[in-house]
Image (tube, rainbow, N blue to C red; front, side, top):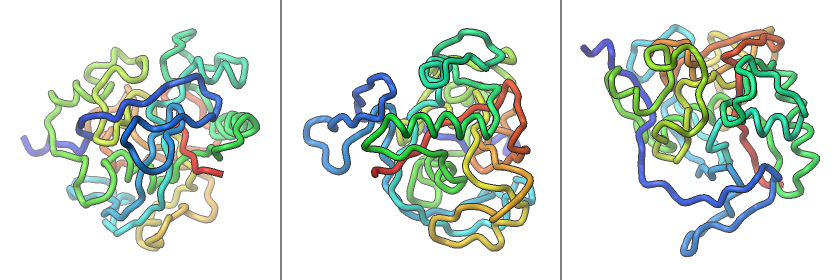
Length: 263
């Protein structure tokens, strides 16, 4: 049965976030909290170090070697960007699943996403929005600092509590936030739609990756996509699995979530 054990994100007591429409305006943290203000729809992630890559030794060659990575503080979206949010900024509904406003937007290319972010940043005087790096994405998906913090070995049946994947998705994406969150309060990091990240892809990049805030290969014909989708098996939605596609790839499983830093 060990073959079916996978890394996914575990739930924890969540901080209550004040949620508004996506404008980039900050809102204060709950009373008694300290640190940077929460930004609407964004979760503050305290930077730290972790062992990135195939820690269970059952992954693909491009998930090796396991190597220490340290990331700085950043914000990341609590949810994948939805059709409603996309329409508000782009005035289009590109998704193959027509007019499911709370479903993640999909069928978007890497350049499409960059145009969305460009327009979003014009509306914000507080935050600089972007895609997360591959290292930031994995750090957040696995719960933050520590070798296994925020991650557990868990069987296929338990994945139903956390992720939309091949077994339970009915071959379609679902509205965001319906499954359990991970220990940072992030939803759908595993499954639902695959998420574009900022890095160029290189199969052996882990062998040369810098420790501090790695940005990916300097150039490639491929971009990295993370998290797996509703079409993947449990193995394909592990928090360490790496996918790569050309920047113009478009399909019903391609979406994204935002990252941000304060200006």
